[in-house]
Length: 241
Ligand code: HEC
Image (cartoon, rainbow, N blue to C red; front, side, top):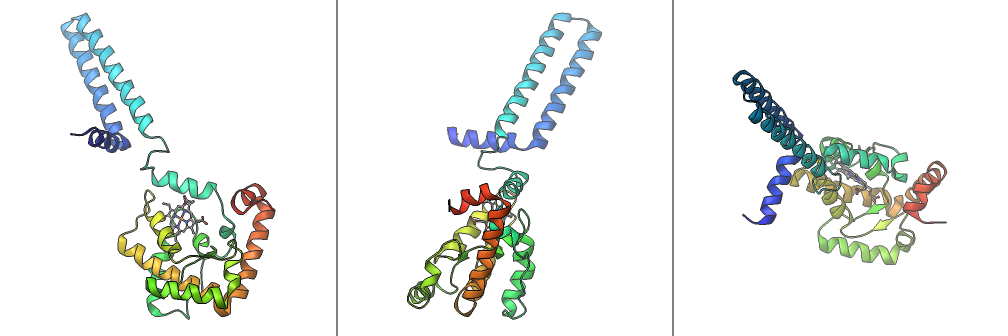
């Protein structure tokens, strides 16, 4: 077995708090059983040695498990991700958490209801993706590129301020992938693809073309409110002005 496999197995094993607990308990039981037995038989030396070994083994397990429970290990827990998501707010969080999708095609309504809202509200609220500046056009890669080229000519304002519109042909794709990789995200590849498709359709419809002006007003207001309520975080995220 390679060193890498070794450390992977060790990591998986000790990362599981139930296993660690189980081990601690069984070690303690062994030590107690042994203590009782040797007390009855009466050989003091071996008893002391075994108790010392038991305590040593037990405490090294504890040290190991706390080392591997570090937040920075790649497989952090769902609770850690959720805490991260809530500790660092975004301007997006202050906006609405639901959308009126009654005019969307039935397929998009279904994804919104059955996947987007439940899956994307587990760590932060759905306000974070709903009010995000991210825009990715819908369609095939080819269609996405064509749309962006057309927008550059016909709606140059979409490219002037990334705090209002961040336009990219793979932006939602990358972000849904990023969220999928988080511990406890509970997203299958199919779920993630559907949500990605929905976010492209929705961001194009609600943030560009005839809706662009309304979107810009909404997003500017969110940023102004966030600057007033969280000045330090505002500067960290959106610049110094
Ligand atoms: C397991 C927890 C978790 C789940 C589930 C989750 N997120 Fe997130 N999300 C986070 C965290 C943590 C952040 C903070 C930034 C980061 O780590 O990327 C975040 C940040 C974001 C941002 C802000 C990005 C930015 O830079 O402006 C968006 C947008 C987002 N999530 C969308 C989604 C979508 C869409 C879904 C559903 C597919 C989702 N999230 C599900 C944890 C989660």
